[in-house]
Image (cartoon, rainbow, N blue to C red):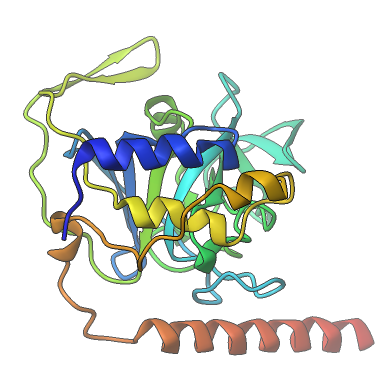
Length: 278
């Protein structure tokens, strides 16, 4: 059962102390692992769709697995304001290099970093695991799983998304297809490199209160015991009608994808160990 917007916002307000960036329900991203696509929503209307790459090692949030977490997350930090498209980051610092798309032999993080924090127990490690939405020079691999856990985008696409996505925006990663939704009728205008979407106001998407409140099950290290004690436990998470409209996956189940990710990670580590011995 969907919950009233007022109740949702009150719970978000109550739990915002557990994250630096308050959750923003008017801006939302849905990422489909099956489609390898990302859709940007504003007030429930589709603004844009981009091709992406999730992890080549499958799904999950376990330490050391290099997998992509599922569920509800939020934009916690944004790094890369106004840096050149193709600029290279190392440990979230600019190196001074600027790479063209598909530069040979290179696979760094480029252009922009959108750092995500998990809002549920199933993705509670996302922030500490440094799960980002970021640019990559390996654009020829976009559209199929190719990352080490993060969400990769083409440099021009991540720069455009970065400018439209505020701190606190909700990001949902799903294993199935993107839901069908109407695209905003308003045109997009480029203004000084920033995409401005003029959308017709609509009610904010129904992100379930229980889903957001779930972050309290595994609070980040900086949360005090006193704050955690003031949060009332909620029932299992519910999602909006538009998200429930997603067709069921006809391929692998989530558990199968997680298992595949674990096996792929083990094979990769064994391969690296074998190469070191040679």
